[in-house]
Image (cartoon, rainbow, N blue to C red; front, side, top):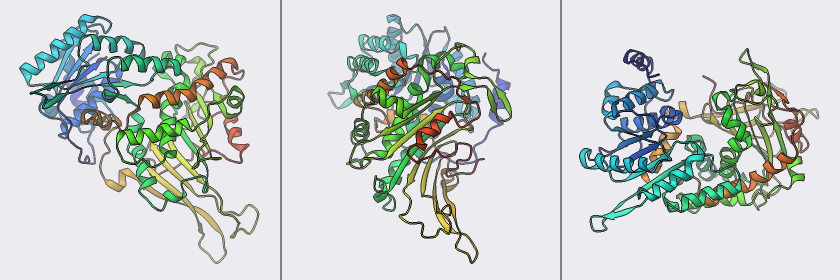
Length: 536
C-alpha cells in the first residue's frame, strides 16, 4: 500500500547523511527502461540509486526512466509509488522533497504483460514520445528486474521490436546505443547458462550486455586490485611461496524470509558461490591485467576459473560441505529452523550453508587451498577475504611450544563495515620477551570521510558510461558454471542424511571445521572477526 504524504515526510525528516559523496563522473544521456518496475529490486535498489545519481549531478537533462509493469497505473501513480520506496530506502539518508519533485518529472510508466508483443510496441511508442515531446535521449538502457524465467521471452521481443538495435544518425557522426542489464542468476547450471547466453547473443552483441553482480560494485571489492597491484609491500608476497591458505566468507544472520520459494529452487551453492564468492576468489587470485579496462580485467578473472580443476564425485565428497540450519537463537531471539519456514518443505534437502575447498592449478597458486563458505542464520553478518600467510621458519621468540607468534593475516572486509585489517606479531610491554598479536586497521568510513556510493549506484553509472569492467563476460559465466555444475550433480546422487546439521546463530556445521582441520587450517570465527572498522 502506498504511504500518504505525511508518512513519507516523516521518513524523510528522520534521516540525514553525516558525510558527503565523492566526486562521480558524468553518465551518458539515456533513457532507462526498467522491465519489472513494480518489483522489490526497483523499489529498494534501482530507483534510490538513480535518484541519488541525479541528485549529485551524474545524469544529464536528457536522462529519463520508463517503468514497465503489469498494473494499470498513470505516470503520477508510478511516481508516487517510487517516491514511497525511495523515502524508505536505507541507502537514501539525503532524500529531499524538492529534489524528488524535479527527479519525478523524469519518470514515466507503461503497463503490459512482458509476454505480450503489444507491450513492446507500447514501450517503443513511449520512448519515441519521450524523445520528441520531452527531449529524452535516444540511447536506451534496458534493465531486466524480472524473474529469470522471463528473460528468453523479453530478449526475443526486444529483438523483434527493433529496440535492441544500435544505429548511427547525423550521417554516421553519432552512435545511438542500446544496452541491456541482466541480473543473476545467469542460469541454473552450465547447460542453462549456455542457453541463456545464446538467447542474449541472438539479439544483442556482447559489448551491449552487462551481467550484473552487485558485490562487484562495493568499494572494498574494487580495492582488492589496488591493494594487491598498487603496493610493493604486498604484491611480491601474494603467491604460494608466502601464502598458506585463503578463506572467503559470506555469512548472514537472517533466514530465507520471503525468498523461500526462490531459495528452494536455488540453495546456497547456486545463490552465492556460483557468482559472488567465485568473483571474490578470482579478484584475489588473478594475475595483473595489462590495463585497467574491461576486457583485460575480465580475461584475467576467467583464467583463474579455468585454472581450477573440475571436481569428480569423489573430490566433491572430500572438498565440499553442505548444511541446513535448525532452530536456534539470534541476538537473544529464538528463530525457526529452515524446514519450519513458510513455503519450505518439511523434508527439504536444500542447503543453506556451503563450504568448498578450491585448488587453483597455476604457477602462482599451486598447492594453496582457497576455502569459501556462505550460510544463512550464522552468528552475524560478515563478508570478508582473509589471506593467511605461512609461519616464520623458526619459533625464535618462543619460550614454550605454544608460545609462538601467530601467522600474519590480511583481512579485507566487504561488509558490514568496509575496510582492511593486517595482523602481525609484536612484543608485549615489559622486560620479558613475551609476544602478542596486534591489528593494523583501515576503515573506509573514517579514512576518507565520504559516503561510498551504493553498489547499484556504481554499477548503473558504469553501464550508462559504457564501462563493463565490473560485469561478467559470457565466457566467464560459463567458466563459473563449469565448476559448480559437477558439485550439484554429485550432491544430487548423494543426498544428505543429517539435515538440519547446524543451529541458527552458530558458526555452521562441524563438518566445515573438519574440512580445514585435515590440512592444519582453521576458519576465522565469524562471531569474533574484525576487519577495518569497529562495529557501529
